[in-house]
Length: 479
Length: 59
Image 1 (cartoon, rainbow over the protein chains, first blue to last red):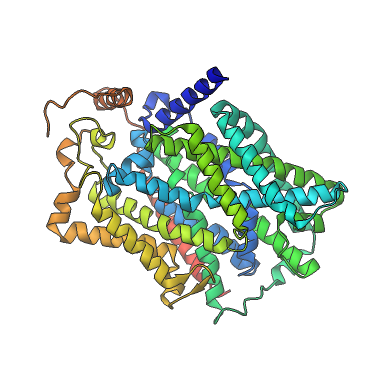
Image 2 (cartoon, each protein chain N blue to C red; image 1 turned 60 degrees about the vertical axis):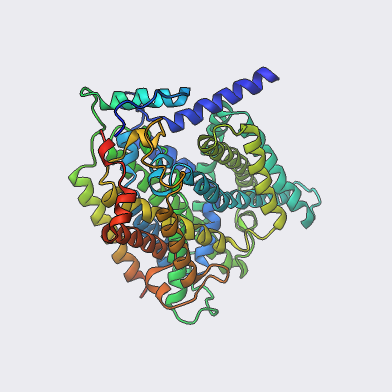
């Protein structure tokens, strides 16, 4: 047992080290198609259908297409532009972000990002629970509503156990999870587009009576699309650092998260539309919608695949974020990190409101993601002019360009907080309505992107002391 | 700039330095850069998606 634990710890430490060290060109193994398929497989987790159902509650089918594909591609195509640094230097985002937040400040950002991102796994566990309830009911097992929480916790426990198995277990999990997700996606697409005549889908209009004008629900759906696109941001350097050309990492990521994932968002949205048309309501959850619309055998198989996929998603996500935390906090014990993440997901499940507040979850997270990516955009193109002091980025002794004030860059924190507040000021993520008319023109998450970036650029360009504060690294740039 | 910084004290830093020095060698060839065609295509895509989002508001 102790030998197994130490081998897992060693494997995780190797992965964390691999995730931290620059990947040399000779070590690059991926091209465009590999990256597109791997990221596409990761991107089509079952939460896509929840996203689609949420957006379909705001807009009709033509606008669903625009706010799924258009919004995702727009945001990704912009914020992925600076990520080409990951391909050049073979390094992950966390090293570059030290230029913005400081060598120690980045740890605060890692924790903050995980706090706002990990609720996705609460969504995942809830989908697992409702799917299991439907499956058990199909098998003739008497189910009660109270069983939902223990089942959701079961998903978290199994996922955590898989993560504790280390990278080899996760590799095997993905060999089942990705095909399962693809089959679920195919099943839902066929189901969604064959349940009713296409004209009825095209004629669908959502009930948006709580909004004050016709544009607000549309912009709310755009905001949901933007927020979904931003939610990938902190993992978007992972594969570009492993590809052979800068354009490959860029286009594969935009393609996977901007086209493949939104395809399944639209499928989920159409599934919800069809459910409204046939039973009058889409507030049923993914599993219940499938049970309503599919033949019993098809429904059963699809639900089994969803269960497999949800467990795999939780295990993979826990593993990936645990490795990120281990990179930022090398001395932390991997098992404790997994346990803490499981505990956090469990709290979300025990609260029980994550699906009811799905829109709030994605947009509150985007209050933070938008500003971070705005800062990165400006830092990469204007402040650093696409070059970084690698020795300071890796905190080598004697190289402290990114230590700033005891490890914290207060300019970066000022700008990210300002962007966060700007997002908050224009949009109430709980009720999913605008606070002020500016939201209709900017959305919330994109306003945060613009505000943080603009403030950072203005301070850099107009305040000499800030410029000097940020640019301590220029003499040490070598490549 | 510190001309003679102290050597890295931990294994990870030593590995990082080794890789950085590899990248700094004149023989090292960086991955192919983002081409002009990709830049143009990216800007066209961004512009087209923006137009689509604005146009869809009136649908």
